[in-house]
Amino acid sequence: MIYGAITNSWRNQLDDTELGDLIAEAQSRGARHIELRQTCLAAAESGEGNAWRPNLETLANVVHRFPDLTFDLAVALPCITTDIDPEGGLYQSQLEAARLVGRGTPHLRTVDPGAPSTPWENSADVAEPAARIVPLVREAARQGVIFSMENSGQPLRSMSLLVQEARAQLTDEEGQYLGLCPDPTNQLRRHPDSQPLDELAALPTDYIKIVHFKQARNGEAIGSVDDGDLDCHAMRRILEGKAYDGPAVMEIPSADDVFDNLAASFSYLDA
Image (cartoon, rainbow, N blue to C red; front, top):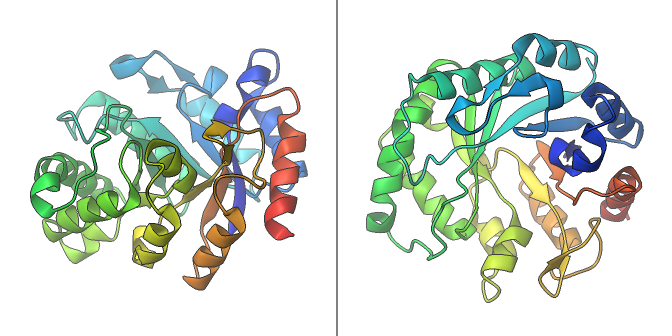
């Protein structure tokens, strides 16, 4: 796995520190991948909601500074609950930015903030959201961009159903561009009686495009990946058993000591 960091961990620092300098600090602490999260890109973005646009020149300057790192672009996109125009300005700008930062492996990681929390249990439940994401995935595949979805609101088993249903409507080649960003701790906080690690273990490996590690205790987020509600060592073993070798992003809360927490998270997982 490629350990990484996400820029929304640096909300406390972005007002007075350049994004590139924060990435450099993360790299010095052991990060080899950076998830560039919309709303936490400083001068590399402008606008909000449908008016959001990346500043491509600034993004290019940031990424070119780090030839030894890999990057993906993460955006809030209501692709499950809203019809998004695949040829519209917002989506096309996201794909363009993903291609720019992703170099040889462009990746657009999405999350739908409005995703329902009632689990989908069968193909009928996912028919409508699948119909919404299929044209988006088809356009992403046409441009060579991986399209992944975080399991916001839904358990992993339900998101797996969604990917399965959507892939059935795509060509085999297009379908390989669609997958998930599993976040078992996120699931456990929303569905405390679920078994997110069992559901992670049941996912086909090619569904997993990127993963998030985070931790909580008694349902409350803590500052680093450590002992807590989820067995993060077991999560790592599951991914290693699947021969997953992609990015593993530490999505930890913003704090003044965030880089110490980032390094501690890497050390904890390696212990």
